[in-house]
Image 1 (cartoon, rainbow, N blue to C red):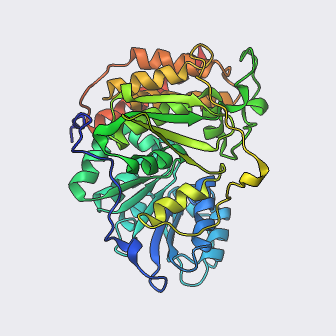
Image 2: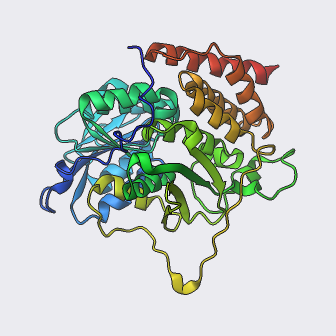
Image 3: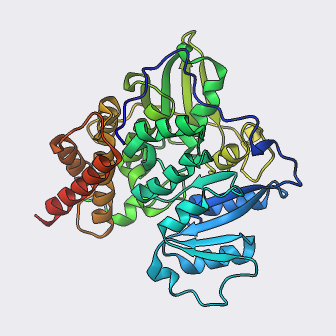
Length: 411
């Protein structure tokens, strides 16, 4: 299926705000069935905290992981889903006949997950599988017309035009779980699309915002994030600011915005999660402590707002908010994100694949920290760009970009 770019930013195309008539209007006695894809990761764990604190409004119908069988079975014992899915067959083979709690059934493989997210018992799908691996199941959920709480930014980075077109064709809804995009989603409700001047994504700046030289950065240093507790891949992305590059591309597709309306500002406190500037000079921001449970709950309960387990700001303690532009020389990843957002087509998929492979090499001790952005720029510049790729084209270039990084590292 060939993709076409979305229409230009238009006053008649406001950001999607979900469906007020979906299952989120149910009462407490009718729990929403939630499929948590990537339940053993940091987003999945926070999602289960939100579900447990909902007083029965949400129920985990399905929990899915790739190889983390032990943590997945422990989650199943506590939360009692109808289905437990292990997408890696070898990992699933280690599960004994009596390991599952009563009432839970086991399904194995990505095909089984694709089928189960389509089930009528699933009202909302939390897509939290890290990296390119999350694209397939997200597409299956959208194809079934589901409401998807998207924590997997790579889905839109890789195939934004395809994903948004499929959602529109099937009447599906995408609600962002990234704290930045959740903040933008909320702030955009303060005006119409033609009134938006700029969308400003905030960045913590990671652990090296004030460090003079990034040469010689160790793995331990890069994994020491000052404000967020995340998995290793996302933490390294924050340190390089590649996470902002990917978020710029995600925002381009999710909110149907041209790259020139997207900006990044460094905000080390991670309290302002993003901002929208309107034509009259008003800047609307969303503030909260750095706690992923809030954007997760916002996506699960939308269009309602509910009390929940997220931390609250306490203004009695005082609050300081600092903002500064990112250093384009020390953090070239932001420029790569702007470039890929402006070009569209295959640029996002290639940048994402190169970054995933490069981060893996850094985590394995095979690459310098500064080499991550360097190799990503080389691969992005050298790929056979296509403006209107099919899903097969995207997958082919994803594999090509990964191999290019492997070759570069080995040489």
